[in-house]
Image (cartoon, rainbow, N blue to C red; front, top):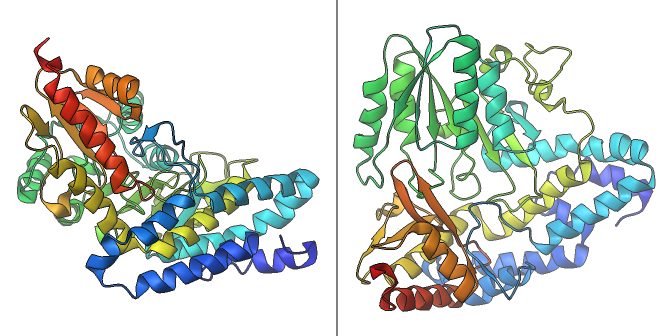
Length: 434
């Protein structure tokens, strides 16, 4: 790392391209620039299948060769430059914690905020750095001024932590929850929009929309839902836990008033890192979840009053951003969709196979969900793990019953060939007829 004298100077100005990588590993930063320059010159189709580049990406991860991890939808591993930065910052903090954490690393938050805002396409003054989507969304759910009788529209397919938060407000404050039971997959966005619209009444104050349903990989038409909601004076909360750094978009373009995500999923940032975005004029309307000198003030930083936090984890987010930008948001999205199409197309012919994610490209990404007739999701996931050393997750909730499979940018087509072979053997084993 740079000398102590220059470190603070560089850290507080680290919002530029590749700046965090250069700060912690100059050699890797130079290599990344070379890879990025070559990759950027490739036509889109060639870039999608350029295994020289994607092989380089894979080499930056330390994933186990003994277990094929296809549950990146739960939490993603971090590339080596993020792990190394986290460790270096952690060691740095331990030299004199109250000095190096609070007077040095903490000074880097504004540069990091600006860099995150660049990827999010928003004003830095609308973005708070926190620990995960649950914390961000709970901040909004519990910070909104709602009273008994006010209605909130949400779905049974939303994430459990959010469902529990809304039920707590229902129990505590007497608000009314209006539940949708989404029938997925759905290829027609207007069908989904109308389910939400039909639930709106004169009492509806908020609609909670999960941008990407984590159980199935269904992308919801959040902008269209938000537009109709706003026409009726309804505020919109977007759960972007699985969409940010997975798809290429600007947060303000979704039309939400509030949005939160976990950065340890598709951005591959340190575990326990996230962001909360609130439209600037709405910040003053949300009470801070934790103590703050101005809990109803207009400064987004009121949501960062967490007490002592892991400054090392926070600063290493910058390295994850730099690594993401080597690939590029658009090409990352396309590669993830390509990987899903790669394996699903090779098992679609199997008898009794059914997919729970849409087939229209704009409505899915890396997350897919497969069901095999006669085989319980838990049994299929268990066989994949115990017999073939492939880690997935069984989904058995509401009207969704299948096994979720989520590759990431480090996943190679050869890895997915291993999955395809396993599914073919399971389908031919008679397992489903037992």
